Length: 170
Image (cartoon, rainbow, N blue to C red; front, side, top):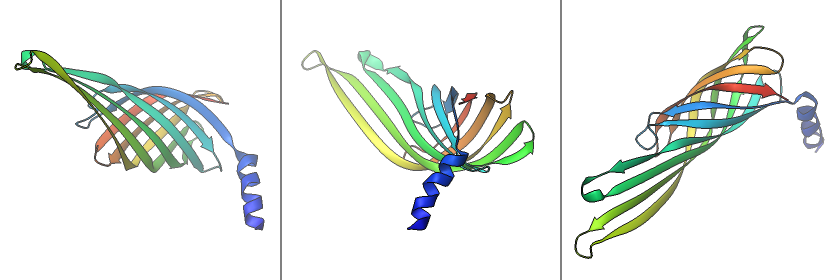
């Protein structure tokens, strides 16, 4: 009981927060595209960071013969843990691992010659997976930092994701 009462206060006494964003690139079959990421980080101890993020990959449109089209959209929610290693005063590196939830939507418009119309179907899938990777942070000042990460998502939507951006410490 005492441990449950002490842990929330010990986390809050150290907590450092940052928010930021940047560009990402996915290499998988479902999100082989550039996107944007929004990222937060909560440093709960000198070495441990909990970092949720959201990535939206730009939609893709494919046109097939006879005017048939397919529109794909893909976005992810992640919660990762980092273990920080201080390389120099301004440089930190970290391994990361965490949980990934991927959302994939496909809208297809298929021309049917029999009725001379387009049939439209929408398919939305959600898949849970795991992240494993590494990242780094370069501090320009006490408040502003550049970050970069590379991670591999292990799920039905396997892919490597590279991200680079800027964070601001609150």
